Every structure is written in C-alpha cells, then in structure tokens.
Length: 176
Ligand SMILES: [Zn+2]
Image 1 (cartoon, helix red, strand yellow):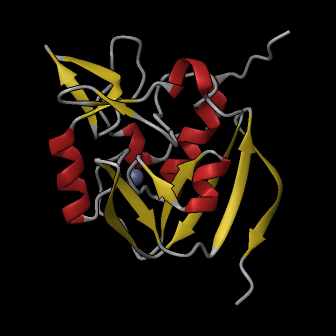
Image 2 (cartoon, rainbow, N blue to C red; image 1 turned 120 degrees about the vertical axis):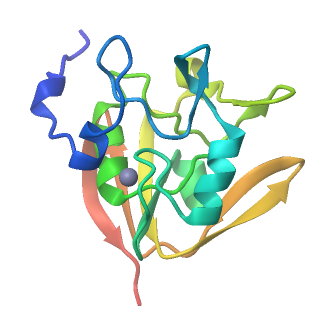
C-alpha cells in the first residue's frame, strides 16, 4: 500500500513559500516554463535557465546561490556529476526531495530528451530512479554533450541519498 505523507508536515523554506502557486496550491519553481499563464512542470524555460546559470541563481526559488550549492539527480548523475537540472540552495533541494514522491514539482533527471524548443524530462512519469542523491559543491560549468546542454558540477564535498522523500543512510563526506 502506498504510504501517504501529509505535505503540511514538511517545513517549507521561506524562499519556496514566497513562490507563486498553481491552482492546486503547489509552488511553481522559478525555472519552469509558463505557457498560456499555466506552469508546465515538466519543461524548463531555456531563457530562465540561461539567466539562472549566468547569475548563479537557484533553479527552484530563483534566489542568488551562496558559496555552496546543491545538485540533485539519480545515482548515475551523482557519479558523473552531470546534471540537466539547475543548481539549487541545499534547503530548496531538500524540500523538493521531501515532496517529490508526491508532487510533480521537481524535474530531477539524469537524461532528458529535447523537442525543437524545450527540454522535456521523460523521467517524471516513467523511468524515474527511486533513489536520488543530493551533492553539495562550490562550482559548476556548462558543457555540451551530444548536442545537449549539461551542467557539470565540481567535486562534491558531501552527498546525501534520498528515497521516498526521506534521507537514507549516512551522509557521505568526501575525504579531504
Ligand atoms: Zn533556492
């Protein structure tokens, strides 16, 4: 039986609470595409994404990132440090990880397929990994891989894995 989590029990960071909400009351991440006044949670607005990369903004709340930033992806992404989702504040990433089994909010992906104009993440409904990692780093760069724009994160100082909206196992600290 599927477990149910009361979303009101998940503490919402102020940065996310300040975001506009959709008709259901779900926060609309900064970087999603708005079409005809409605957010398309599966599609990243490429202009907003470029702007966020140039200005080092959080992909969820749109606020300025600090020294440390978080990347979220499946185990493959964590290993390769290649991401299609933008860097986030760690508290924004944790919130998204906590609510993601229940909301369409995050787009966390390790593969994506693009149509003519927009990147569509096909993992949201079908191939979604059941474990996600959150890696913390201080830098990233944008690279092109097979025609796709990929974000390559710097070395992780910390990795935390999440499953079913909860952190699992011990935080893996990089040996320095
Ligand atoms: Zn944020």
